[in-house]
Image (cartoon, rainbow, N blue to C red):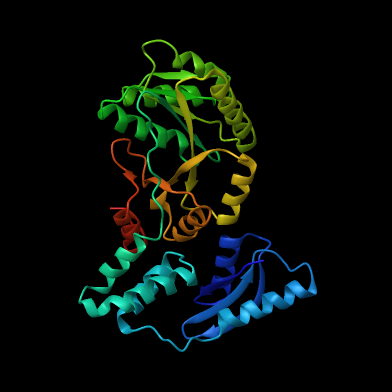
Length: 330
């Protein structure tokens, strides 16, 4: 089991951060007072055997042992900034060491840190194939911002000259279909309600087949996972000129442990990448970004508000650097 380092200005703050990042089952293996606060070595789950406990204690000792290679003055501000964004100790060390190694070039430390952060988080690449309809399905928990994000993307695609259809599977929740239709009118995009994913196949026939179908799921991961796997099988069997691309919608405010549970419930889906929403609602986006990177999920877009014309950004190194160093995506 992995042991991670959690820091806080006092014990209470450190414990709250441990619970936020690792969940209610988190166990403190060791702690140490440091200048300006407290450092904890924490495991996501309790050890199951004495051998596991011994391994955790050794890992905790390594994490909490003061390092002799102190940061240069130029990296102190970077360290503090990344800590305030919730960055892990490993990421902070990585960025600061890179900056230290390049300070002799004469660039400002923050510029160097931004360049390094741009290399940390992967960007999801577009996989659209000419002559094929891309079915972009957004999945995630209810309230994550799936519908709003789809409408923002629809508007962007329509303005670029692409033919787009907005489809919702959320036909039973009160007001859900009306919301999608209202958003579709706003971005000049036709909308459809489908009680079954197989109804999408009717949109794939005929001369009016859209370039992109944006699919809004129900927000119930178990059901959405089953439905999208059914759609994937149907597309393969029919030979329809369409490709299913699934994007996970993750709130920047989420705990990584909650996000992991959600992905487990979705099952084995062909993820193309993810959308990170609500970056304006937290000062600590790093845990979610680091978790997605660990899972190998590239980030396609970031959202920082509800404005359909703005507040929607294509992921890039500059966007990640701004978010981690300035607390905003632009």
